[in-house]
Length: 233
Image (cartoon, rainbow, N blue to C red; front, side, top):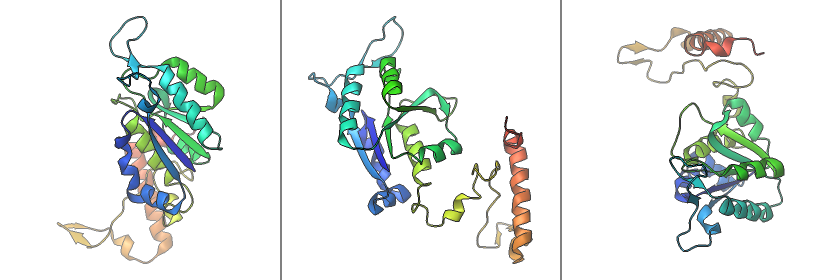
């Protein structure tokens, strides 16, 4: 998979060199390129924003740099581009969407700032490419960089060869196999500050342990996210 990220703060994406994503880059599982939107500006101030038509607070990112950036990226690699735009107005990001995006050959993250990107750029992307507008939740960030990092990590860990033990993806929260939160996990020592590990986990009886974990997952889901237990429409 190829990942392109366009931002006015390219240094924000240095953490992509760390942990599993960094290892995926080293293994050649993913190819990552981070681009500075200001490289596609032509004035001495590298202007990427201007006041909004109709008035109002804030600034809007200009269409010209974005148009040139997308044109350049389209010609830089043969894979079809899926444009991912983090925005509070997007679809809520879910594990199901992460699995969906993990099937794509190339993701291009367009990280807006200020009041967002000129709508004409979004409309252009919808006509020319596959467009995914995504929101991390019902809150507003200063820009799309944090959301892009979150989406990238969620997607990349689903690619074959990234997670050491693929079985660990099956029982985790929000996995497609079941709509449950993950059961609680424990490790050594058996007693910590007076708190003991549940005795069933020492039994060696794998069927009973699996039954306990499923029961705990259902209990935790009912307490914290009862909406996940509702029948999907």
